[in-house]
Length: 163
Image: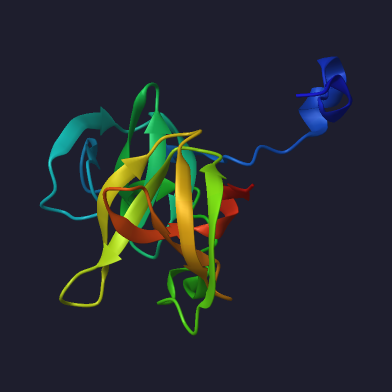
């Protein structure tokens, strides 16, 4: 990254993070489980006590996609403060895609989703930063249908850099 795009020293305090920090604050328990997938019956990656700080990677109405230390996973939104603004249009099912079929690079570790039998998003794999994917289509809701050569699914277009 070029130095001109970085703030250092005192000036860096005025730059807001693209990954907001939140805190585990479960009023009905001692903490929250970090889940492998955004489902209550998904494998727990650990119980994190109230007061634990987490970086937010994404949100839905019911789940926060977070990073705690080196761990990545999902936590129930009911036990997180502050409550971040959720925009339901982000989760809208892709509509009328524009076929583009070109390559893109994943800019940040991201989950690839598919729709399950109940028309809900389900995580099918993780795409690491730097992976090249084929973008099959994109839509106006901010989603792209991609293939990593093994699976086909949906990712948020904002995490793709087109070649």
